[in-house]
Image (cartoon, rainbow, N blue to C red):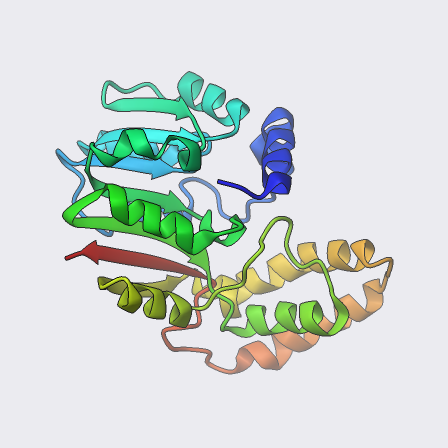
Length: 261
């Protein structure tokens, strides 16, 4: 993994405490982990979780019968993971897979997982090609990534493109499923995808997210407009979100399920 700023952000987050640093609008198991857990059968499979953080997904997959190695390049994350999640099918390692990939090429995995990481990486498609090298024939690559083709995405991307607004903390890329369809076709991989978290893309969760996010974005731009934000959110609630936003792109996150032929 690269993106030197990302490592600094996560080091700070884990020292402070994840729950204090990151505002989580959904309690319990995150929707991304739930979607990945429901995407395939885990019993008896050898799994590599790249960018495992504090190990929540690793533990859940192990409880379902998988043998899981969790990798993360932030030492504080691995320390928390080892302390928090105990299971005989788990191994946590503090590694940067770019630097240790060779030792995994001979150990083909049934499933390679990455939860919300590719959008942060300097070379995301190089990372996905690494995954292809270490997954077995007919194996699976399962990862999640934000989707920006929905009302939330249109609002924030308008701010980003027109006003250079810092809309996210560490994202380097703002993908849609179309680019991953092209990547999978180029690499002769079978791809299925679905978006989820629809309320976050065009519902009540969107309002809660923007109420928290917009003051911070404006602050980082050297601006303040509490009244404007309040009126904008009211308009969204009373008018724009009364339209039945539906369709396969409306969710704010995307599950990508790649199968190697």
